[in-house]
Image (cartoon, rainbow, N blue to C red):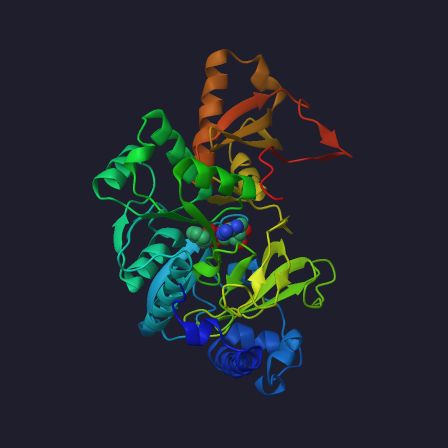
Length: 433
Ligand code: DLL
């Protein structure tokens, strides 16, 4: 089902003309409204008039997390304070989160983009959908919610944390679709199976994203719950969920190129690569007013296919994500940087900066163990003080990354060192194909 055929099926020429006009307008907007961008462009010897269309995109400087951190919280806002209506945020590498601000029009465009994604999954105004992404600063809950309402579906804003209630209401309300992380959906499937309730549900589709997942996970969801599962992608900095989504042919995620201008760069040389190449996804906001980002380095590694899809849409398709060009992990849907853990450990007396994050998936739920080397004298102490230290580490981590981690204290030099450097992550989940 195509939500906005005029947009989703535009010819490439028509689309590129639209992108060029929007890019020129956006570059003018940030140059005149955002001092930080103006200075960056001036330092690169650029004036807005130098950007005449998408062919000039690679003249523009990149935007990175460091720019967001330097301008935190509202330094990249391109609309007056009185026009801003919403803030969302996700974890940064240390301390300050990545923030996004929206105007009313941004929220409407976001809702339309999500509605396009949901339509792609066959959802209509006759559907009843549970949103199982977290509501709050995280974009997942409210993003999916507004999109589903825009479409006219009946929305149950479940948020996260109460699987029993989610299952009860799924059955009582004849829920036909669910939007949540893929690992959570498998967890729900398991609980439904244990309770013998799979044949009581009316679920037809799931829209899963916020973390990488595999074809094997899709097969499991589809066969265990008798549904169709779709992949939705997005990131706070650009908007939230709904930047791209896959259609019934599952040949990649259609990116809404009338709002998001994608390119692939080599993360090492930072050079734009020819169409079809593998590299890091970079996106420019073509229509966002609140905090438009120009050439934002997503750090997600993938490639993009441009040929027309069997579904009829002409919008390019992001292929399977193959990893990240930084060390960000997504654990239970939460973005975690090892540097956040390191910063938290530094504040706990008795620990050292030598640590290892062991991430695994047990019964479809991510587990995190933080192994940390402690000072010599700690091990000579009695059990009680070890327990106290372990709790202090746990609580600091909970505050820093928002997750409950299992803490394992290790004796000095107890962790393996590689070429003198500590390796900080062992991820046993194998989420990238
Ligand atoms: O995760 C937005 C979102 C919410 C997307 C709900 C889909 C559904 P952030 O917390 O800023 O935003 O995390 C963005 O998560 O750069 C990717 O690395 C990863 N990610 C998001 N969706 C997918 C996906 C939301 N479908 C970061 N497949 C991104 C693989 C994904 N990775």
